[in-house]
Every structure is written in structure tokens, then in C-alpha cells.
Image (cartoon, rainbow, N blue to C red; front, side, top):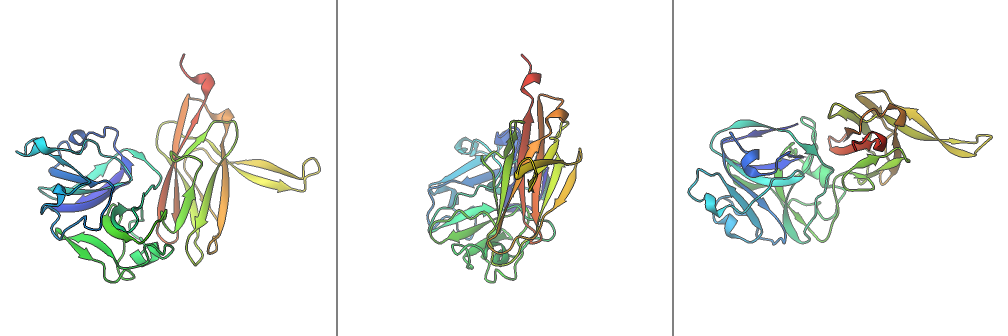
Length: 313
């Protein structure tokens, strides 16, 4: 579940989870929200104005949802709400938004030489400053950043003094091309996360994108009734039978935390994981891996494991 404090008027929000029903009418049912807008490429350098509502949505690239009780609801062009996406949300009154849904890995698609409406998963409290978060990317190491305050976009003049917020979206200029996703890059074989079939291990690769050490931590978060039973593989060297072979170290059932060694600047570590097949007692098991750092960043990785012999015919 993601919790976002919504103020009366305009809010720039970043959704970490995808709601089970993506229809905006369902997402915002019984909430005091009357306008929601998302920006989709192609991007230009003139995507926002001081006032979010002044002729903004007439520009190309915007999809807008209007509540059914508004006279302009027939102009709705935004048909779905997804996770890992930034939105502008207009509320008639303040409220606490508790949104359930599927967590996704980060996946910002930067538009080169343009402002991008983006957000990132960070700790609350304990998030990094803008300067700390973007120091590892030459394309974003500047103060061409705007955050929404009191209904108007305000420039972040000193990125080293302003702390990022969980659930917040902002405009930041991308100078040239970039694939930057944060100080700690988390790589999996597929964009959807990890699928542990019992036929072998899947690997998470962590890369330090900064010029200083980062200490990551791995946490297993229960997200359903059937959690994935994990083992972490370590390499044994010098065995009399095989010089190098993998040993599966079982993690406890349920939630657990795993401390990891500090990654030096530019360093990387690979973490091989597999499901304990003997503990799979349902057709589908699912969990989440939460990867945090001492910088206050977060990355969520969905994990699934299936038993084909238990699948219904």
C-alpha cells in the first residue's frame, strides 16, 4: 500500500503501485478528486506553466480525466492510471490517499534535452536531497528542477538543501540521453521482476552509480497469502569434488532482512536467488523484495514462483 497526503488544489504525485482496476473512475471513486492529468512523450521544453491549470492541458502529450459530475467530463482523454507514473491531481479538499496495488521496479524513460515529469521511491522520513540523488548522473546534476508548492511550480534553486519526498512528482531537465534510475541501479533479467521456476537461479545485480560507497539492504516483504520461499546461493571454492559450485542457503519463511556489504563507488554485486521447490505448496507464490540504501532510496522488485504440477487442469 502507498500512502500520499493530498492537499486541496493541485498536487504533483508519483504512484509506486498500479491499482488493480486502472480505470480512473474506479481509482478515484469516493475521493474528492475532480481532475487528473498525466504527461506522455514526445516531450518538449515547454511542458509546464506557473499555474498547473492555465491552458496546460491544451498542449500535446497530456491525457486528462475529468470527474463525471463536471460539465467538461466529455473531454476526458486519460483512460488508465498506472504505477511508476507521475500525475497532477486536483482535489476539492485535503485527504489521505491510501492506494493498494502491484509494486513495480523503477522504469523512467527519459526524454533527452527536455523537462520530464517524474518521481522516485524514497524513504519517508530519511530521503536524500535532490543533489545527493542525482549526483551520479551528469544529465541531471543541475538545478533545473521544479516542484509544486501552493499550487504553483517553484524552482529548486539549491538542490543540496532540498529533500525529496515520497510520493512526490517534479519536473527535471534531462541534458542529453540518460537511463538513470537512481544512485543504486537494480537490474533483473526482465522488467517485470523475478520469476523463480525451480529450474535455476535468477540474479539481481546492484550497481553503485555514485562516487562514494553505498550500503544496500535486502528485505523480503509478504504481499499475499503464499509468500515465495527463498534461498540465496553462495559459491563454494576449493571443494574436492568440484572446485567451484553453488550452495543454497535457505532464508526463513516469512519476512526477513539481509544486510549486504557496502558497494564502493562504481562497484557492483550479484545476488543469485532461487525458490525452495520443496516448500512450494500452491500453484502460485508471490512476494516483494525491497532494496533500500543508507542514502534513503528504495526499489521494489516483484517476485513470483509457480508449481506447474499444482496448476488446475
